[in-house]
Length: 73
Image 1 (cartoon, rainbow, N blue to C red):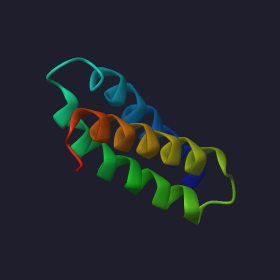
Image 2 (cartoon, helix red, strand yellow):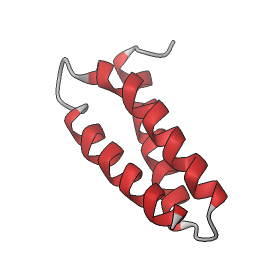
Image 3 (cartoon, rainbow, N blue to C red):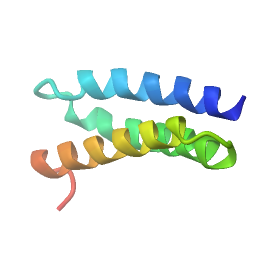
């Protein structure tokens, strides 16, 4: 059950991360990263690994996008 919750949170975060790739919307990654961290927490508590892996991928994508845009120096 926790893996399903993690997958849902990860899917929402991934959809939001797609919108954060548009110019002038990179600041949204600052909200996406904590959301994906919450999803990863649920993923770590579950037996399955799909939700955890999805959230870790979303976190990685958001951090790379922030570093490319100058949000993380």
